[in-house]
Length: 144
Image 1 (cartoon, rainbow, N blue to C red):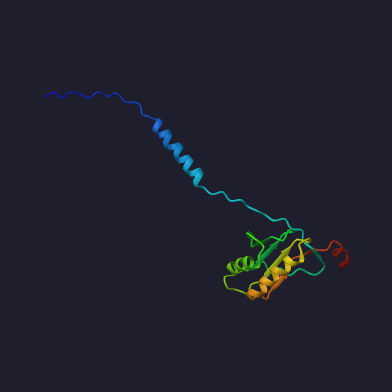
Image 2: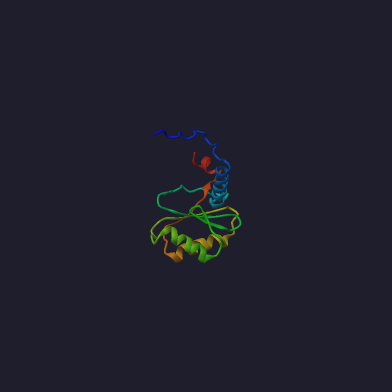
């Protein structure tokens, strides 16, 4: 018995549908991806002549800008309210009120913003409170 051979013509692959799928995937990934905006607050520290005592391990840093906006361990807060600041500090501390809390404020920050940060720390039970300063320009000459 003789079988008829099938023709071996290779049909060209339809690439248009593949290209459409790739464009849809590209659009999907572009729309579903999240873009993070890193914000760094610029702070000019006030001057002091004392010796620094820095313990950077397991500390909470409250950064206050010249306008009085807060940032807790690098995370900017949505507003400058006391309750928002307290909840952000409590979230970072996770109940450990024996951790050192460092207040870093710009030299031209309103005094009320610094007092609010210290009040929030006090209400949460923090007792190790420090304020960041920079070395005074004439302090190195005075020691010599």
